[in-house]
Image (cartoon, rainbow, N blue to C red; front, side):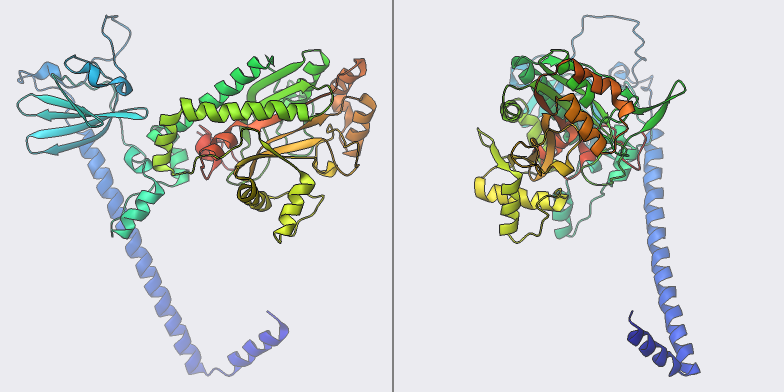
Length: 523
């Protein structure tokens, strides 16, 4: 508030009479009292709702668990004997997803979770869920039962036994499986649905992971790893496994988790960078690793984690870092096509709860220089530092511009400014302001960072000093280049980001099984 405004307020206060002040105070007290009453009423309603929910759960838990001893059908239901590996039989269990018309007339044995139970007249409807598949069983008083899979009806005799009873759930799986669009559509009809917040989901993650969408998300994630591994193996790469306890930070800076290593200071690996390069110096040619990465970054955003899975690769090059881009181009087109064919059902299941547009990509991935990207932004009226890093908002804007002009959600941006890249990045031979480095994007967000690395020991030492990195902590890494090192380059990929962006999800915590972010260390 300016001095002029402050004096105006003071003058207004001075002009108030004692009666006016008292009236104003009374009105304020009335307003506060009404707000407090509304808040109390809302709290009472919430408490009543929670009490009713607790009572219903208690009622369910108090339900009969043993078959009636006088019931002639008592062997057909109730709690099963605890499975303790006592017997081995020749019984065969059928997956719910495998139920199909060819099984009509046969008897099947299924083990699945009870998704919903509904009674109507002399019948009961039981939906059993197994991963992303479900089957409806219909039971009648006359002992006849029918099982409906999708739109298929099948008649069979039925026995139902409980293997493990669930206690009070932190939330209902049906509520957690409901999409935001379903909640919005219900609100338009004047109906209300229970929603489950992200923190509540993560606190009860074991239950949250049971939803069909989450089951599908982690099948997609598994397939990304498998496709990554298979594609690189087919290109002649060797899978390696590197240490995660280091004597010094692998990326420099302060974003490192420090710990004690038997009385000596140590830190968790920010990447396998040093060891990938040392493997190249050891004449391994082409290497990759799938392993956890640790970043002590206090970035509480939709796309950052303190621990994530890194898909890393490194390879020798003959002439140019574009050889690395060529491999990544083939690799990710292979991954995208593989997901479309091998995970079609899972992508459909994810889309039911989290609708998204299929990823658009080119057979030969688009490559733009950093300078070309900056020009596109400037031409669109965006103010941006031509030698500065791109923040999330600007990255998304550039992604939209690229999509509009080139029709792709996946593209490569290379020749980044040298000043914003790690010390081991090879400078550009044509302009000292730039480097032989690149980032790769999906839907306007970075998923890959990579570059040609410095293989000359003297230049590497100079760049480490220029970044203020204590070289004594890097001595074993630096020494590896003294014995002759081939030109090489590579990249690091964030697995959770790839899945998040391919599936059009809004938060990386959805693609991390048990996320570790600045605020969460459990479960």
